[in-house]
Image 1 (spheres, rainbow over the protein chains, first blue to last red):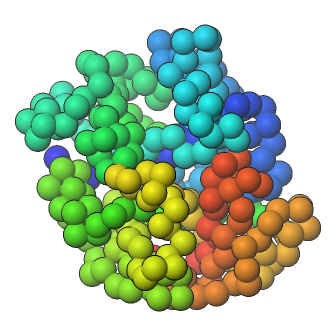
Image 2 (image 1 turned 30 degrees about the vertical axis):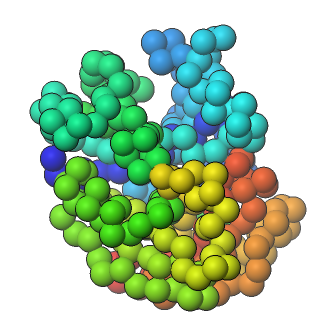
Length: 139
Length: 139
């Protein structure tokens, strides 16, 4: 695998509404996308653009959301995962598995509409790592 | 303030040597800079380039390093801070203070040789946030 673009930093938050106000009013973001639900991942999602990468705000959606545990430990939210692009998601998955990394489930459609998977943080220097197939066009 | 480039994600590690092997052999990074000591911050630093942003690996330097606490809680390491560029560091500092954010110390020279400061994670949605003056030229 060749290291691709840092597509986004995933930031967990107890409130996308409050986080949007922070990114707009404190950090000065000028392009904040409409939030949307991603029920398959158990999160509500909102992308904030920086000039070269995105912040992906994620808020729990439903009682089984995988980020409830993170927010229990970090009630204010914080950096949750980091996402890199690859040209071929299945080739990347096979490479991680061949290296003995725990790939969490099969590739599935992510927040940008392309295939993604996650790799276990304990195999990745403590970082929950998302790998996503590069979208066509921008982001 | 207008949100600038996401310059880097700061990643704490107990061993830059081991992390460099991970980013090279697992993640496929092709440009990894020489590590160097930043005694004023109490860290050893190594930048890894992605096509659009950097990963800043930081390892404790000395007994008083500010990242010992993070590694005690996260022995494998993990996402430690996030850094955005601004054109004028002193103007940015004044804006954060006017907004009631806790700026941690005076602007000082950071790992890229330009002025930086940090803002308290409790005022920033749980994210330790570094603000840096945009370097001339690249990174």
